[in-house]
Length: 373
Image 1 (cartoon, rainbow, N blue to C red):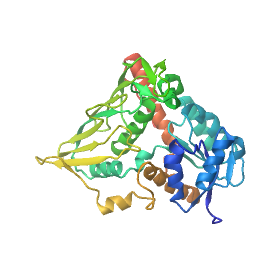
Image 2: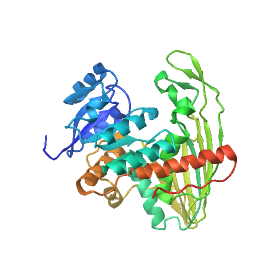
Image 3: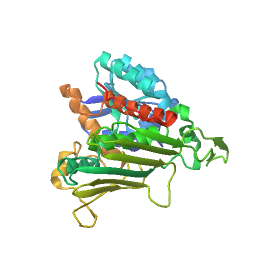
Image 4: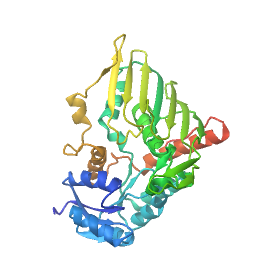
């Protein structure tokens, strides 16, 4: 190990499944500035299995032992949303930098609490809104800024959430209970709305409506059914800073038709992002465009655009790619005291937006939110 490497400990590193093994660990392995030094799960045997599989020196069944270990500089929280607040709080109180998956907390109050504690401790803090690192999302942002579509006239989105359909495995059944904070709105909705606002600007007044069309879900591994309290239909409307209307419809599950259609229509042209789901943070996205009367055609990324937004050139393709870009930005932030990676402030802004959407759906009124100061 190099002496100046950033020592990482991952809470929630199951050896066989989950975002840690599919994204965080491959991302870290591609970045020489990091050393994965510790993992923890709730059971010693799974922690040991992860450590053995990936060559990690330390394995714990107690997260407190991980966050207080002197070899760990950065704590990664990769567990279910209801556990984020307690685990991030523990890491921050130990004085460690923190990378927490999105959503930061179960609602706005938890996110504010964590942001304030991170600021008090003076550490680096990152939230996993990694769609901001997507080459396609950055190409959209650049093309709109360069005037490819002219003045934006409207934005229309139709997307599927993959989960929140009729069947789920028991491990993910918690997604269907609204109280857990891991909903169609908060997860694919939060990731997508963050990408949209990153590319086009924050929304003004917001209107919304929800529906729960499937009231029970079947557990694939047992055949048992459970009640559904989380909406599987989310409709949001808003306006961009220039007054252009935005409409978004998120649907639970997958369809036989369109699973992602994000169209930006302007006075000079159109951009269209398509993909297998609304999970733009991990989906394989395709960008099409046209100007004037030309038909839509796929727009390959130019070398200049690709290199400008690729902070981790050796990152593996797939789910780890965007996550690796955030880790590369975080390494710079730790070294130089900057804030290039999406921080807990970014998370608070997005949580405020989601809270405004929930108020709008509950009251029928149009609501506003304010970016974090």
